[in-house]
Image: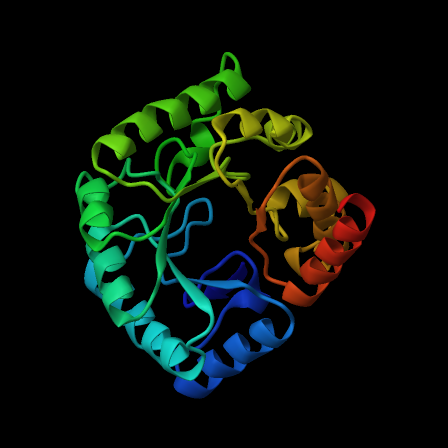
Length: 258
């Protein structure tokens, strides 16, 4: 899953993209040619402490780019990265095929009903709080048990809405300390018990660049190392800024373990 950020304040400056047709299609073409299976298109920065924006502005950021890409590259799967039901609906109407919700439905009471109505695959991520305050919500008695319980409770509600195609994301970097992130990755195989595809987003995050004492722009090597660990621990989808390197990692993994 290649990340297409249509935000001016994403944590990794190299991923920021101007909202014009040439730039958007150029980045999409690059990622597809490098082996992306899915493009995740987002217009709301979810980095810690990011500014809140209106629903209207978020829609304006993602609607045309989704339409441009779906028309130019009809074979690629498009995901709309949002926790707002109206943005999700508009993204699907523009040509996206699935919804990636960092809040797992916690920040919009209409999300599950909307996903049920538009009948698309749904990615639920674990997070506590909001992007603005999540880094202050890292107290867990047993982080693995609490995240597993979170998914169990969410999935029970989701099934009641008739939503069948679900992917889970443990939420690396969201309401978790550096140490908690590594503990979670170390025990990622426990999420296999949920029996759903697992998406992992580690790309250039602070758990890498802070530990290595580098900038996000220098965190590709660390990202590649942890992506291999994630695959070995059972990850099914890697959400990345750097598709070429992630695809090479996947090929090496398949050669070892296929």
